[in-house]
Length: 295
Image 1 (cartoon, rainbow, N blue to C red):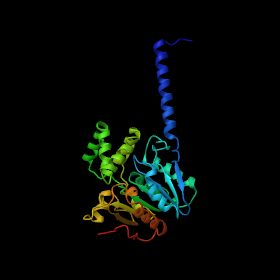
Image 2: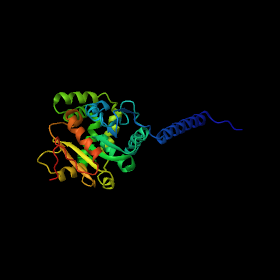
Image 3: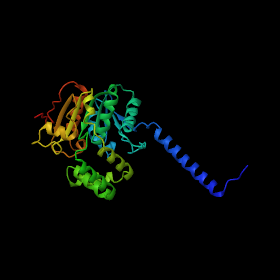
Image 4: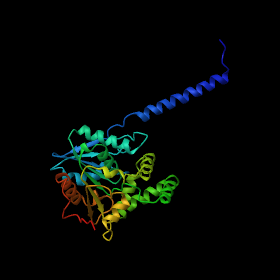
């Protein structure tokens, strides 16, 4: 039997090593996403609260405590946050599968599913994929498409790689109701692995559910601060800018005097909106604490 040259042996070893790496990556990629970590408080019909990017489940606690006497409140994590793995490669479908698995694990039947910001994008995908799991959907400060043109999106992607720290800090400072809260939110976002943040931001910049949501079967409430939906802007214009205009059963709600983190700034008002959505899924939202307009 002819012996192989050292060069051939080395080349074969390299090829085998590359195959092993590729197979391991393939196995990792095909692995089903793990269920999101979740924590429960209260008793009654189930309400699932999902936080946004760079946030944490504790941000929902002021609202959750108000709901807990009448509802079983489940606080669920986004992949890549807290105890929940990112489940690479990150896709909206895989993130939705993680949340679906957490809802199924609770075994509570159809739930009122509430998502804040990017968590609302994931919640909307769950409602599209598994409407049998969702009694009603509440989107809090959620855009279903990038609120920017292609040039602005490309510029942000460049900034994301060239000035990540500055981009994240400026974004979360702007999210705050004031500079003190903005600084606190930016500091918390800075503790999240930049690889996780970048993966989610790239996903958000390249995801558009504005057409697909015409197939939503569940009643949906869209909650916005008066920063995102100014008093002088019609709902039709706001809905178009944020990709919500095609949702069939949609109740828009404006809550005044708060920043992007409505659950921190106006927990009682938001809890009333969520409770109404949970109890009256087929009726328009009408709560004294919120200003509703469909001009």
